[in-house]
Length: 74
Image (cartoon, one colour):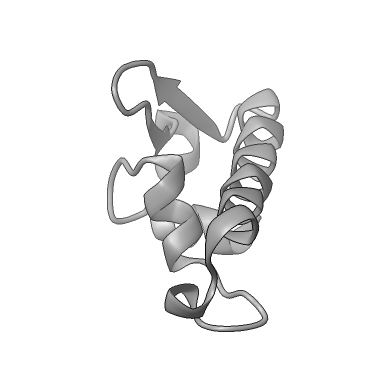
């Protein structure tokens, strides 16, 4: 969760952007196909848990953008 929060301190990001900046067992550019989609799914599950805790919020759109809540940003 700390990694996701650190990424969002730079401002709103899509789940794809967040996943691409997270640390994985190998570099993002080496992750392809289904495994890349699974990584994005993992990022989304972290985001949803943080949303439930009131740490992040999502602005629906194409793409949806995640950001820290005012409470978490301070």
